[in-house]
Length: 209
Ligand SMILES: C[S@@+](CC[C@H](N)C(=O)[O-])C[C@H]1O[C@@H](n2cnc3c(N)ncnc32)[C@H](O)[C@@H]1O
Image: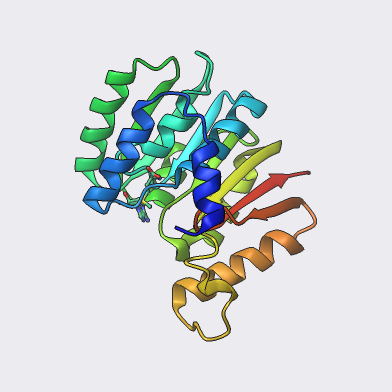
C-alpha cells in the first residue's frame, strides 16, 4: 500500500469494529472486497441519500453491503445479487450476526438477468452499486438508468482497474470496457459523474434528469 493510501486508511473510523476484522479475513482468503475507504464512501453516500431502495450487483459475502446497511434506516430494502450460492449463505449468516435495521434480500443468479426479472418500478431506486463483472458495467448502466430516481446515484467500483485503465499499453477486454464506460458516464448529458481514485477507483454517477 502506498503512503497516501496508508495515511487515509489510518484515518478511518469504522461504524462497527467488526468491519475491520472482516476485511482482514477477506484479504487472508484473497476474496476481493471493496477497500475500507470505498466502504466508507458507500457509508457516506448512504447517510446522505437516506435510500429506501438499494441494489448491489456483485455482493460477495456481504462486506460492502454491511457498510451500506449500517448507514441505513429501518425503512430501507437492499437487494444483493451474486451468482454464487455459497456467498449468499455466508452473507445471510453475517447479516444476522449484525442485527441490521435494513431489510436485505439476497438473490442468486446472473446480475443483469436477476435485476431485469425483479421488475423494479421506473424511477424507484435510490442507490445502486456495481461491483460485478467489469465488462458488464455499460450494459448494466443502460438497464438501471430507467429504474433510478432523478437524483439517484450509482457507485461503480474498480473503474481504474489496477490503474491499467490509464496506461496506453493495456489492451485487455475488461480495461477497454471500463474505458468505454467511463467515457459514457462523462459524455451523457443526463448524468453528472466524478471518479474518486480511492482503492481501485470509484465512479460516482448521478442521474440528473
Ligand atoms: C469483487 S466481488 C464483490 C465483493 C463485494 N461487493 C464486497 O465488496 O464485499 C465480485 C462478486 O461479484 C460476483 N459476480 C461477478 N460477476 C457477476 C455477474 N455477472 N452476476 C452475478 N454475480 C457476479 C462474484 O461472484 C463476486 O462475488
